[in-house]
Image 1 (cartoon, rainbow, N blue to C red):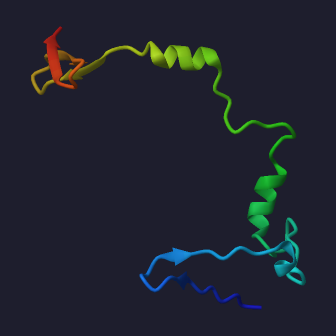
Image 2 (image 1 turned 120 degrees about the vertical axis):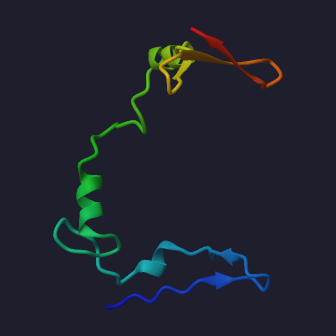
Amino acid sequence: MVMEIKVLKNPDGTIFYPQTHWEAIRGLVLVGQDVDGIMTALDKIKLDSIEDGAEKNNVTSLDISNWNEKQDAVLVSANGTKFRILVTDNGELRTIQL
């Protein structure tokens, strides 16, 4: 079965997505690890490999603290001179030669 995808647009050209119900997919083939269906088999394999209780990311509060205390940005000019980049409270960029 080939799925035809149509885009719905308001008169002004804005794309919109209608609300639907789970019964709208009744009769569609369910996916398996070797059979495409409502999603691809490859996506099913990826989902099955996610551990129970997995979090969206593994960033710890220590990681966040370290990032917040990140080192100053240092750029090196073509002749090898190093400059530290600073931002003033007014958003102006300043440099200090190291």
